[in-house]
Length: 135
Image (cartoon, rainbow, N blue to C red):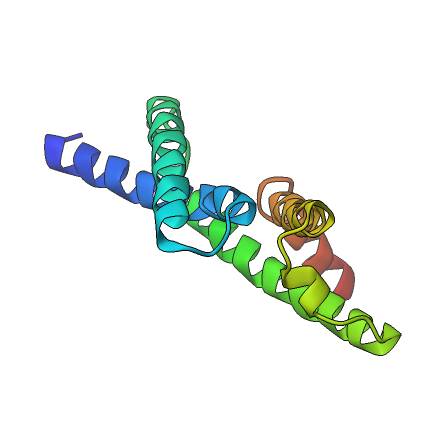
């Protein structure tokens, strides 16, 4: 591969992995600009290290971006579902947005569930089996 294509691969993988890593540090900090910059710095360091490993192992960039797309779709679906369930139970959504430990743990759990479902669908052939079952 040429140097330009290798550089493009590194940049694309870094942006993709940054999009995957960014939500976790942002869960733990309050919503002020300085804490957000600090959390973004942590995410940049983690994404840069993961990018080097990802590119050196020659993993598929196309599958990575499919995974990212699936993560955000599933995370949105999980968020909407939990919002509907909590509204039906009469629980305020403000308890989910607060920065208490239980709120952060619950949001991290929902995010990890989204990542696990997306991983199963993209990397373990879950989408193909699901499509074959309903076809």
